[in-house]
Image 1 (cartoon, rainbow, N blue to C red):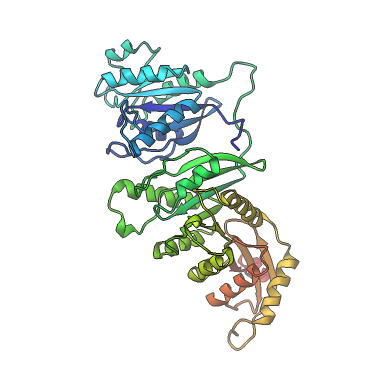
Image 2 (cartoon, one colour; image 1 turned 180 degrees about the vertical axis):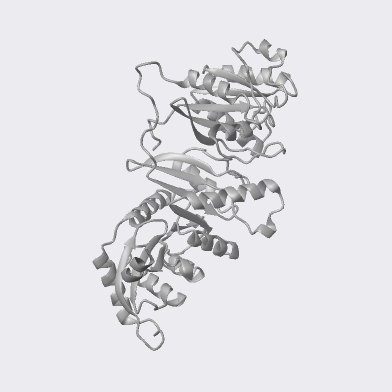
Length: 449
């Protein structure tokens, strides 16, 4: 499923709190990972795309390298670090220049060298004097590079060294992953509904940490894969909660990453809990996805815990609980057993195609006129409102521009909802959000010019 032509990858490793995530954000040119003074903020491995001097590559941010990891969450973090080392084509070891060289850095270097991959050392936090402390030269690694990730100093020299380690020799084609992603799907939901378990089930690997501890996922984690030859991006996100329930600044940053993922995705895969039903937080989250105008698929996870339920009854119950999202397909899944998890991506791709499809003006007008005739809108100033034109504009969301007569005619919000339901009734627009716009008459547009 993973693209074979992905660009070369560089894993960033080091002790906790040496500034790996800050350096990662600096090199990719975006605040992609959550950073905080608290130890152990980063848990999963985070991928980011970068380019320097014409060479594209992937950076992998990791949690703090612990030589003696405990059990549970700490053990899972270390598995993520070692998976990043296996996945990478080169390794960047980050050390703390303010603390100087410590025995843990030397022990980590021994472990990293065992991977047998090109290696580079960055000495971070040299904010006042950009010079490598002498003790780092005893590591036996060519050219430790002094950097200040927080100020961006020394990053050019660092990138020069990284590119030299991953750039293909002259005459060898670049592995630059030329195909652009066809679509981006964000996996969103409340805490502990099984979002990370779903991502792992879709990728068939432990891509992200799964734990019963609420708030395990903190970053929006992108994963690239191929579905039927189409390159797509899956984004795992932190569980959304009401702002009143968020007190930790790290959780606040994590939630902002989730909102950003909603804004940049094509389709939101909203995960619900079959054992708990649709909660108030679920309604708030689905409403946020609808307001963002993104395609929508509702996934009811933990279906293996429900005895004797039917898919038809489930869909009806979910639509009753979420009447404003009745246009979205509903699918029962089990991330634990793998039941119908691959079908969720098939549905998301189908929604993407529908959102990008151009519906002809004649067909769009015919559908709306049938609904108009069955239930006309309220009169304006005693005059009936007639539908003259309807233009379908693909996008996020899909927009339908209506030409009305008289031109001053207004349609109440309730009638907008009625037209939306009429368009969705045929089933070929399932999951597609639709907005109606009242177009200016051509004569008025010409006069305004």
